[in-house]
Length: 273
Image 1 (cartoon, rainbow, N blue to C red):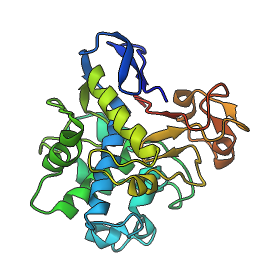
Image 2 (cartoon, rainbow, N blue to C red; image 1 turned 180 degrees about the vertical axis):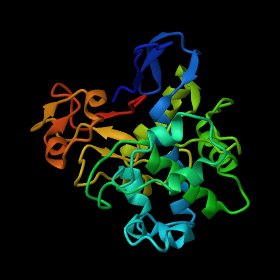
Image 3 (spheres, rainbow, N blue to C red; image 1 turned 90 degrees about the vertical axis):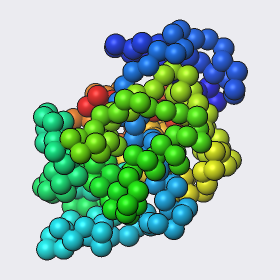
Image 4 (tube, one colour; image 1 turned 45 degrees about the vertical axis):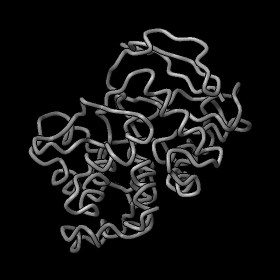
């Protein structure tokens, strides 16, 4: 497995590793927004909290959100659906991204439902900002930002002094962290070990496997990871071109990242969508 960071439009640097050995690089210490790769940090935070017994992937969010008790549809949403982006909530990009927010959690919880929970993969910020609010309430007096810094990023050797946040200082989980190319290599090596079933930096690989489990609505996505599991039978797609408007489950069931690479290829795609 070759974890690598490729420069794209506006990219500042890249590097390629084989195991722990860096074999090529450009601007290794360049720093910038990692966009949707931020979602993988959210997945690792969930892995920690499940391991600690603080939450379950299949509990009903309504038990933590009294605001939803009168909504029979939202009452069916679980953390797993948020991680799979199948909660049924509106994507929320306009509501969550287009202006400074005093409280992004309140905005996310008020978003309307557009699909039955679990039925449709709909890429968007909503799932992750509802997840952020859920995790914050589970943590009680400890802030989610402190928890991620000390229990997710610290053990991997990461730090993000800049992170997009609302006016309360609550960091976005859908996007917003900033890392260097070298930092992304550290993150990639941790994820690679977990995906091989090996413990890394105190994370439980079995729990992480469950956190990143895919759905029937999109078998190639889960917990922030895009997977090439359909390489032998699917058709290769450019992920960025397939997110809006949402595609059907039959589309995703026949899609893969690459026909030329093995089925264990996993991609962290820093989508700006």
